[in-house]
Length: 410
Image (tube, rainbow, N blue to C red; front, side):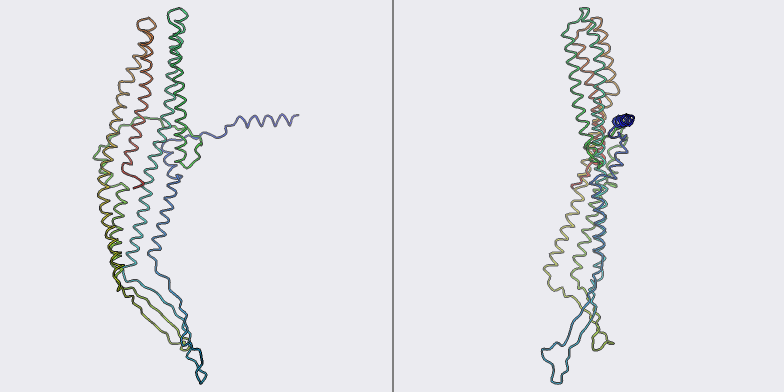
């Protein structure tokens, strides 16, 4: 009996434990975590390793060849029974014209640099995506909290309505309308909870975790003024943009490829060292030289490399113009959202709240009608939600500005 009671107590204790602990996650922690565990970033890291391997292959020297051949084979022996048959063992090595391997190694290093820049660009873009998913989840949660506060304020109003109804100073229809308004808030809160769950799932996937992994997001939507001007954003992008650096690296690599294509028209060499079986102490030596007499293939190689170099140069110039244009548009979006935040935070929110409290007081002494109070209440709820939305748009616009033009598909 005692054993049975102990098992029950243990089961109850285990049942009382949460299935999974809620992890507190700041915005900075979320960004740091995604840079370590995001699947796309981990794949890009492997690409960097692969580019290092390609560079090592491109700058490598061809392997030597072990040669074994027989000379003097005959179907019949000579009359005296002797034979000229001889076995030769040797080693051959192909050597490129001086400078070719150095150019090929430079091309490989260019590919290695491009892979690293692709990784830098991806880190920026993924960090921005994490910020936007984080802000979306916090926005949905903050909206639910705001709706709860508005609902509590409405409960106070409904309680006053019921008191007036009991004394005959209010119609029951007004009570019903207020209750319907509360039901609308509850429905809206349910929708926002769904939005929060979807944003959390997206955030978890960016973090390389399961979509349903629980987390408590502790960074709120707060307004911090943007102090950098448009010219400063553009100047910073010209020197730090991974996209512009990547295109510059591609242009340099394309120029090196043109040099290599031209140098491929020069002959390569081959060296050999042999030891004959009948003269073991005497070594044979030979030098070979390739004859690049057929010009069509090499001319085509040069033409292709020159065209690729021109395309790379055009792409670099076009991309800088596109980048500056995108930064300008993103900057204007931030400034517009910032102006909206200031409107709500400096005057509008306080004015609407004061007007609602004044209206409720006037309704209690029968100076205004029920529908006037209801309209003031709806305006108050809308103002609070729009304030949150303006904050959310401001913060997400800032995230977009940070990666303006950094398109990972480019």
